[in-house]
Amino acid sequence: MPRAKSSVPKKARHKKVLAKAKGYRGKRSKWFTIANQSVVKSGAFAFAGRKKKKAEYRQIWHVRIGAGLEGTGLAYSRFMAGLKKAGIALDRKILALLAAEDPATFKKLAEAAQSKAA
Image (cartoon, rainbow, N blue to C red):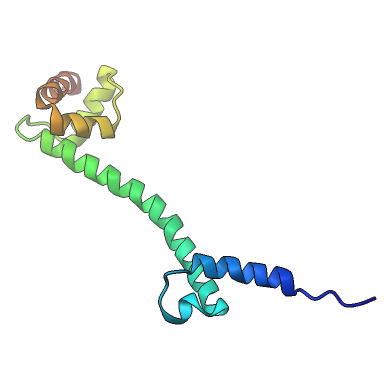
């Protein structure tokens, strides 16, 4: 029985990797071995970056809420605890948006949280 060569599937695999490496500089876009390493590594960075982005947004929201609380005499942690006790279920994203765009409503929330926190 004749030997089955792997030329066609191999070519397809190489083509797929080199297509993903398009735009890379030098050997990274031309040589399969180096391109493959770059593609795998970039995939790992992309995966980690998607997780990191969520953490960074949460930090930004935290800072914006803290900035909105300036002058109320209320710390971030006490504010969040007060909201929880008051039964106000707003996430940090919405609270940060309110702090930046609607300070009057945010002040009312801070007052409600302060009354429950004390």
